[in-house]
Image (cartoon, rainbow, N blue to C red; front, side, top):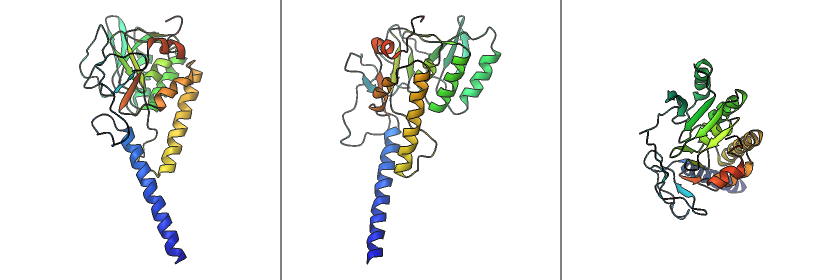
Length: 246
């Protein structure tokens, strides 16, 4: 009888862990997957203007462009970071995929003329790659910038933070939200939570080392992965994303 009771308890715990794990996985999926009932109203689309206190938008940069002017629409951004030189400026555009940091660094080191200033436009992607590349940009004293009408979302602000000098146009769109960490999304819930907490700790240490106020993570941690929190120009200054030399 006792063994049967223990088995039932273990089964209930396992079901609970699987349920929490499923919520974590679903919570990390981008727009296109319906939000679970009762988890809050949908945010407006990116095309809606952003005002103080009304800064969360649906995260669908492949469908919508933010309401900024002038708007530079490059069409679909690359699936992986792409380094190009356009009108005398080095640009780094596209999603951040595994393996991109070392690949892009080799291109930066071989670039002629040298990459001294890097314009960013990315919907985000792999956080660990962004941190790796951001640290390398700081070592190389590269300036990072986001131009008017362009975007830097999700993991992209960590690339921005790596700049020795950081220049963000008031009409640029920079946003943060929750991330997943690690590659195994089938972990038991308690291990998944440990993985997320470890990753968030690494991000906060990185931001502090780059001169960014880690309090910016309050917006990231409270914004679901299928939404994006757009940082206002005054918040970008307050948290240190804009430097005095920018």
